[in-house]
Length: 169
Image (cartoon, rainbow, N blue to C red; front, top):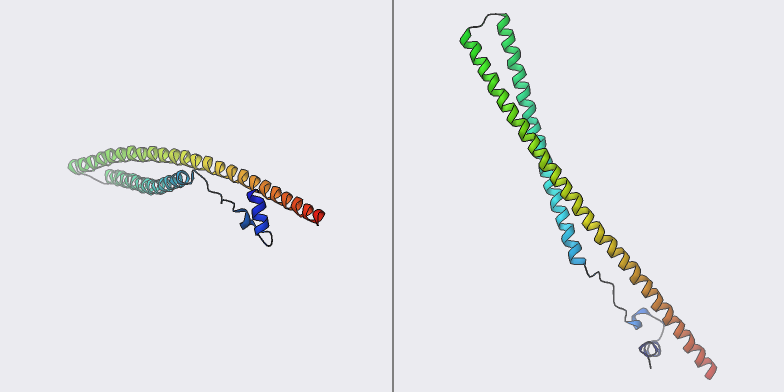
């Protein structure tokens, strides 16, 4: 006697528990979880880099404003009267601000480059996660189709057995 027939005979009303069907489990679930974790970490890192970029841009604007302010002050002093030593002080300070401004521009470009790299890494991580999620969905669909087929086969066999019992009686 087949296991399905035994299950049918031993069960009172029809129930799926009598089939003892294994529950679906995605075999690559640990890999999927790891990819999700990597993606979350990259999102956090990207957020840190965005804040860093905003801070570096703020510093750059501050340098620009300071330089512009001292250039205007120097121009104003020239129109009035200014000593050579005072003028040299302004010029040196403005030159220093120009160097700092250039360093800050380089720093902003560097952080933007790192931000782009993190963004690309995040996009790649998202693609990897989505690939596994699609595979999981595909396997789930296949599992459901197989489960439905088993249920129909079981119901067919049950109906045949019931028919044979009514014919024999």
